[in-house]
Image (cartoon, rainbow, N blue to C red; front, side, top):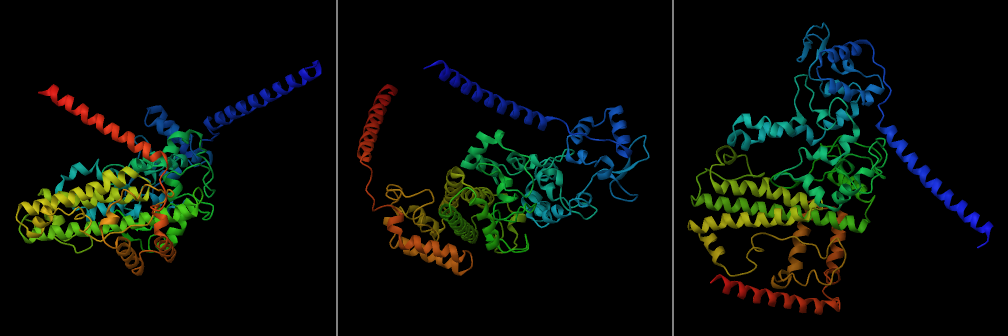
Length: 531
C-alpha cells in the first residue's frame, strides 16, 4: 500500500469515528435536553401559593412535580386548577390565607381545558368502575367488612368516582398529580396498578406475552413523548397503544378505553358490547382494534388470532352455563343451603346476597370472577399460561369439584358422571368450539397428539354447527364466518395431519424412550435405597 492510499484510509477511518462520536454526543445532548426542567414563569396567585408552601415546607415535592409539567410551561398554575367559589363542596381556605381554593379538583375542573378527553372518559367503562363496586358488588357488600374496601377495591375503583359536583372520574389515576405527564399514562405499569391480581391479571398477561417481552427489553429506547394523534413509534404495543393511541388507519387517540373492546369479557357471560360505549357497534370497534394489530402483524395472523379468541369467549359461556346448571341440580337435591342458584344474566336472585358461606358457592363464584376471566383475557391478550393453567385447567377442575360434591351427596347424574370411564366425559359436559389449525403457522405434529378429534364422532362437523349458530346469532362477523368456512373446507391441510414428520422425529422419539427408561431404572434404585 503506497503512502497516499494509506493516508486516504486513515482519513476515512477518522471520519467514520468522528461521525460516530457526533451521533453519541447528539444523543446525550438530546437526553439532557429532555431531562432539563422547562422554563416557567410563576406569578399572581400561584406565586403566593408556592411561596407559602415553600416557606412552611408543605407539599413542596408536589410543587417540584408541577414545575416539570406542561401545565407549568404554559402558565397554568396552582390557582387555575384549584380555583373555587363559595358554597362548592370542597371549597376551603388555607391556614393564614384568604384565598378560597378547591381541595379536590374534579373532571369538572379539567373539562374547562380538556373537554374532549373528559367526554370520552365519561363514555367508557372506566366511568362505571365505582358503580359496579357499589351497586353490584355483593361479594364486597355481603362477604367483607366495609373498612377493608377503603384501601382495597375502592383504591382502584375510585377512577370512576361520582363527585358532588356531578362530574365522574379521577384523571390523576393515570396522570399523577401534579405533573400530569402523558408518558406516565403510556407506560403499562400505570395500568398495572389496578389491572393485576387473580381476577384481572392484565399486567401479568401482558408481561407474559411477546408484546410484554418486547416492552421489558426495549422500553428504555422508546420515545414516550410523541404527540397525541400520531401513530405510536414503538416496536410493540403497550396497554395504551391498543386501547387509546392513534393508529395508521384510525388517526385519533381516545380516552374511551371501551372504544375498541368487542366483548364484555369481565362479566359472568361474555356478551358483545353495545353501541352506547363509544357510540359505535362492536363490529366497528373490532375494525379499530384490527387497525392496531395490522401495524405490526399480517391480516392472516390477526384475523385467525382474533377469531380464535372470540371462540374462546363462546367456549367459556358454555362452561359457565354448565357450572350454573350443576349448581342448580345440587340445590334441588339440597346439597347446599342457599334458596336458589341462578346467576350471570339469568336473573337477579338471592344467591349473591345470601351466598359466600359455603365452599361450593366459592368455587362457582371463582369459575366466573377469577378463572373465567383469566381464561378469556389470556386468550385475548396472548397470555398462554393464563389461558391454560390459570384459566381453562382451573375452570375444569372447579367444575369437577362441584360434580364430585354432588356425587358424594347422592345426586344421580353426578354419580354417573364421576364413575364413567369415558375419556371424553369432560368434552361432553357442554357444546364445543374449535378452529382448524392455529394462528402461529402450520404444524405437522400439533394435531397428531389431539386424540379428541379422533374419538368424538363427526368432531369438526359438530364444532362447525356450534360456530354457525354463533354466527347466526350475530356473535361473529360475516368476515369471520367466511374465514371459518375456508378453514373448515381446508381442515385437513390446516390441521397438518397429512404432512410428513421431519426425519429427526424418529431420533427424537428414540431418545425420549431412552430418557424414560433411565427414569424408570433410577426410580428402582431410589426405591431400593428407601427400604
